[in-house]
Image (spheres, rainbow, N blue to C red):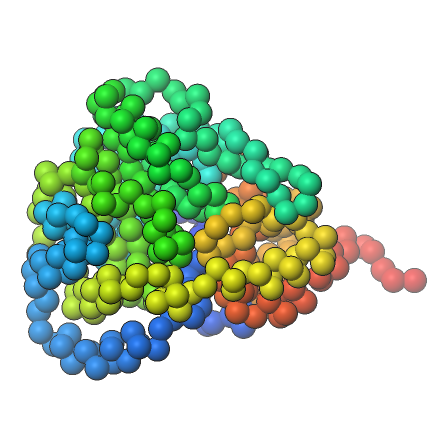
Length: 371
């Protein structure tokens, strides 16, 4: 079991830290779509009055909409207030011997395991990812890599595309890995929180439940409304049934269900107001500054500015004081994360402001003075 308290001592996520008030001028720390659909906002406004009524206790209509969109069975689907809560419920309900975490990975997986008393086995990156220049960064995950010997009860988690690198994993290789785990008595959980940004082209969601495969989805990022918590998990019927029972009735509110049903009608990222080209001006600006970044997919860019860890934290604090929030990659596991910067979607909507602030000269050490 990992060490640490049940609540994080330091905030290693994007967005505001616990207790933080106010809205920054520019929040480049999150992977939330900054171009939410005006149609969805109008729909939520019209439906607000319906929130005076209780929703469907088991979100049957919502589950059926997800099943129809992704060629699944509604009995294999459980909806809830966000993917994070669902992963906590999963680890608190299902028997898991070890949680296998190839890094980089979302930090809440380890915290959810800690809360459930599940042992965490971290697996460092083993693959070089190409940078925009001539370099490479050892932050890649190899689905065909030299994994530890699988045991009965293992649960391995892979995010596709990977956060924060944007590395897209081959569905064929993920299927083969899921089969290996299944034969050993384990399971694979694929977190597809960013698949909608890439038109679901490498999704395994239609196959969830086969051989124990689990697929987790967040919808709050692609719809651009993180304050409305909406997510779902697909997997074997017995797992989904136990989770629905554990969470109890009304786990999905009316507005959350409305967001999910609306999202199921969108067939491409453009339908959510997102296009991959939104990243291009920022990447071009980084190139002009001589800063390399990982060539990846999704609503993020992982940049390598050439900072030390101390310089990265100092730059984060200085920009924060100026009203610009950035996120270092130190919460994703590998030890050199504070030297890297994960740039999120809002910087894509205002790349000029972000790049201007990014050029701040390094802070002079105390005692330095100008002649």
